[in-house]
Length: 179
Image 1 (cartoon, helix red, strand yellow):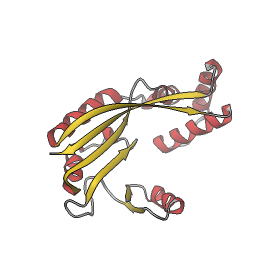
Image 2 (cartoon, rainbow, N blue to C red):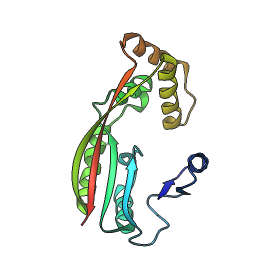
Image 3 (cartoon, helix red, strand yellow):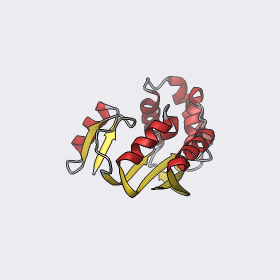
Image 4 (tube, rainbow, N blue to C red):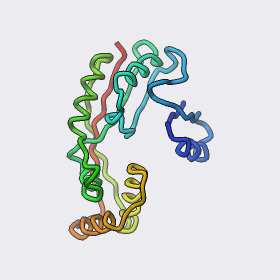
């Protein structure tokens, strides 16, 4: 099993957490693996839809997959409460998830037999502080900048209207078999 990220910081963190997985810094459009190296490739919440050169990335994933190999990509669903919260607290990054996902699916279908599945997950938080800390980390990682007070204020406003500390996350899975 191997995890690849373009972020050296993420890889260093992962290496400390799990010694049984191989972690490597790498670029999706230029993987340092030979042809047909993997039975399965899994991409979870990696923002694949925002990849600038999707075709090059998809071709590279296809190259390192074995014949009849599976590529599994999880992407956010724009109807997810999770996405709505991120859009509220960081409106400048307002998601274009649906259009990007449709674009990604079209590219995938050129190289793979694609099936689309939906998944719903619930996050339960013990306290408002835990809830806020979770989304603060999401924004800091996603935006690569400090979490500003106005974002915290927006999150407080959202929480004041919420009756429970449960968040519904919806995602779309593309199950892609190499042609």
